[in-house]
Length: 281
Image 1 (spheres, rainbow, N blue to C red):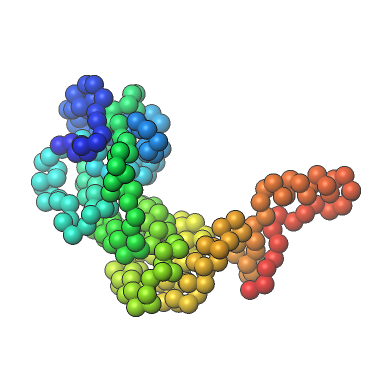
Image 2 (spheres, rainbow, N blue to C red):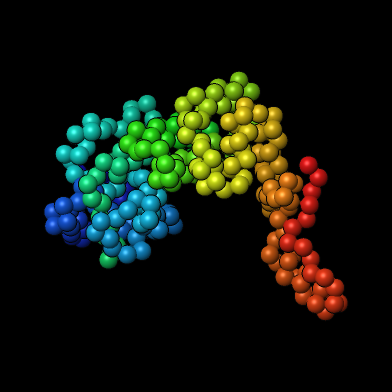
C-alpha cells in the first residue's frame, strides 16, 4: 500500500523499484528518497544512503512519520490501523509509528529521488497550516502512547519518545500558549500529566533540549505561572539564550562576541572574555 498526496508525485519507475525492494528484501516498509519540487522542506536525514535493514534510531527513520512510504497491506490490516477521524493534522504520526514498531524489516532507498513533494498553489497544505497548542498536544499524546504500547521501558523507548517530547511539545509550549485562556492552559496541563506525564523519565528529560526541558519541567509540576514567565522571556528575547549551570542561570554569549572579545583581549594583553555571564535568579 502506498499513500500518495494529490499534489505530490512519484518519479518514473519509483513504485516498481520500491515493490521490487520489498519483495527481494522481505521488507514490510520501504522508504524512497523524498525531494522537493519547490521550496517545501523534504526530510533528508534518513536518506543519506540506502539501507536494506534500517534501524529506527540509528538510521534516523523515526524522523519521518509521514505516510508516503510503501507499506505491506497485511501489516496494516493485522494491526487494525486507521487514521483517527477526529484529527485533521498529525493523524499520520501514530499510524506510522505503529507500522514502524511492528515491521519485520524496514528498507531505505536513497539512490535516487522517488517521491516529490511541493507546496500547494493555494497554500492549503494542512501540514503547514496554523495549529494551536491543543492540536499539537493531541498529536504528542497519541504518538507517545503508541510508542509506549509497542516498546518496553528503557533506553530505546526514551530515544523514540524524544520525537513527541522534544519536537511536538516544543510547539505546544511556544508563544501561542500565552494566548490561551487560563482554563484551557489548566486543561491541557492536566491532559499532559495524566496521559503521558509518567513517560517523562529522567533519561528522556536529559534527551530534551534545555529550553523545552525547562518548560516541560514547569508543566509537569503544574507551575503555570513559572511556565508563562519562561515562555514570555524566550518570546521577547529570542537571541538572549539562557542555560542552567552550576546552580545559577547563565546567559549564552553569541560566538561572534566571544571571538571579538578574544581578539581585543589579545591585543590589550587582558584576560579573555568569559563564555557566559551570570544573571540573577
